[in-house]
Length: 120
Image (cartoon, rainbow, N blue to C red; front, side, top):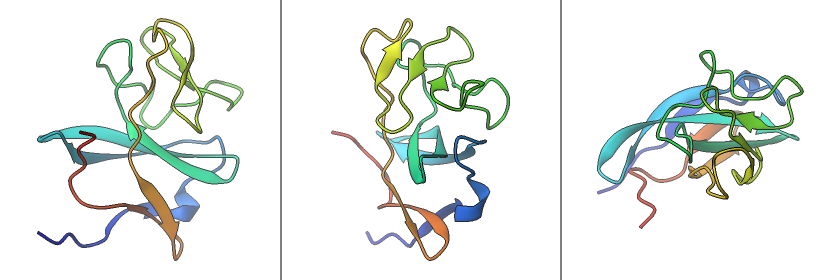
């Protein structure tokens, strides 16, 4: 089955270390929440699921960064992740990281690579 281009947002909607954009993807046969953020000029996307417990990260809609704009932080238990890799930096994530979602920027848009995403 061929998939069309899936635009998540315009590139301009993502400011460096600013608010993220939420969207949904098909992941392992289910619709799951995800988000995209910009960090140091590049766009990164992850499932919106803490590695510690399957809860959404944002403390307020689209708010994923800590107050310094350096790390992604889970609003529930404070697990902290590197925005460019999704790796656990500290907190109850116990070395587990965020699940990346493949995205790219093209023609002023942030685009989901592929269709349904399955990490298997």
